[in-house]
Length: 236
Image (cartoon, rainbow, N blue to C red; front, side, top):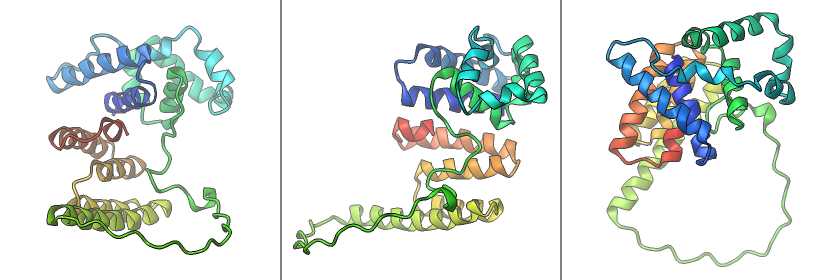
């Protein structure tokens, strides 16, 4: 889980800031670590995954960020962080704690919400009701452009997939992750959109199925390359 989570974090960093040299070097290091793990070599040849925690300005950055400053008063977490600083390869044992991913995002200089709901599934309490807009005079509807059969089929598949995703998001917000995963899978069956796999991975992570999360992340990368998915989608 540590390598995959770090891989996703570095990809997200490059997505948000393509010129981030620290993210580029970290991404290359973590990819080598994953390749080594697949070949049966569990050692991190470069220390790239856990090495990020050896930033000389680590505590200064954590203290200046409101999302991570409270962690400095958490003795248990600080002990974990110290272990990772002393032995970067041990990050795989600690990365299941979303707080470590949040620390990584701060050290990379980006803003990521780990351990939160997947895309499109923000808690209802955090969603503000839209303000009513002034009524406008109805405008004539434009003539619909003719669509070929392939385009219509893709549109129907996307609508079916998004409908299942919405149901899955509702279950996710209720923390009914098994039901959420079921509907995310139906969304994937209806429309091969990699974002549905991202939703499945997020639900499995919250459900404690870390091995399933790894497998889903790997599948998302493979499917994304096969279907030439947008890099921004893969980075999520």
